[in-house]
Amino acid sequence: MTMTKKPKTTWGGFSLKPRKEMPEGLWTKCPACEHMLYRSAVEKNLNVCPTCSYHFRIGAPTRIEYLADDGTFQPLLDDLTSGDPLDFQFRGTTYKERILADEKKSGAKEAIQIGKAFIKGRGVVLGVMEPNFLMGSMGAVVGEKFCAAVDKALEESLPLVVVSCSGGARMHEGVVSLGQMAKTAAALARLDDAKGLFISVLTDPTTGGVTASFAMLGDVIMAEPGALIGFAGPRTIAETIKVELPDGFQTAEFMLEHGFIDMIVARKDLRSEIARIIDYCRK
Ligand SMILES: [Zn+2]
Image (tube, rainbow, N blue to C red; front, top):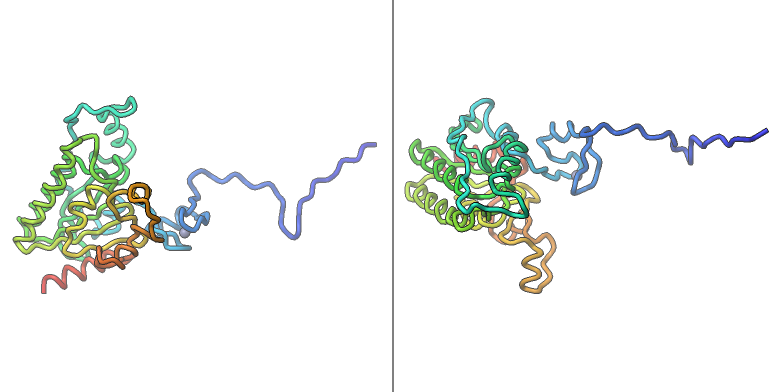
């Protein structure tokens, strides 16, 4: 007779039943607190971690849904697409192929959406950057659409609200992309001359040429909690100037403490805070 040992089913009060397979996409891990979160609970919470309030990165359509009054967003220049001025290739992929791949991935034709909308009943021109399209980078189309948004704001005397989320200038377009920094800054100077209002909302991440141009030129600059805001990345800075960077360097909280931004606003409060600033500036 052979004795087979029965496998243990409990240990110290815990069940040792084999775990059921987790359905793909039902759960997500918070990068900040590392809790496993039920994805739909995170989505219901405006893509903010219910445990630690980490603000997840979101695409432009979701951002517009969260910010604009229902069904009021009317897109402008939606079909504008990038040329390829340098015939650019990187590691065997052409710029044109990259654009097509990111169009498919994000459903967007470029890294910014602009349009007219209402926020809590206040008419605005709204621009929202798309992190899933070449990391929200600024090339000729982003610059052109940003300036068109400024023109619309001037033409209709509307406040301009732009939500930045960007890896910076788009190197695939070389100096053409860098030129957009001056172009967008010049457009904002015109808006300023006409006493227009520009509310700049910085989200994670806002970096490079976008930080060094329009994102930091807001009459009011708000940021979402914990957003990375900077020009060069922390590792590049640390290696270049050979110093140890302080804790929390380049976070929204650090930027507020050092006077670079005006306020930190949680995602759930953005609509009411933008409406409040618009009303305050109209008085
Ligand atoms: Zn968390």
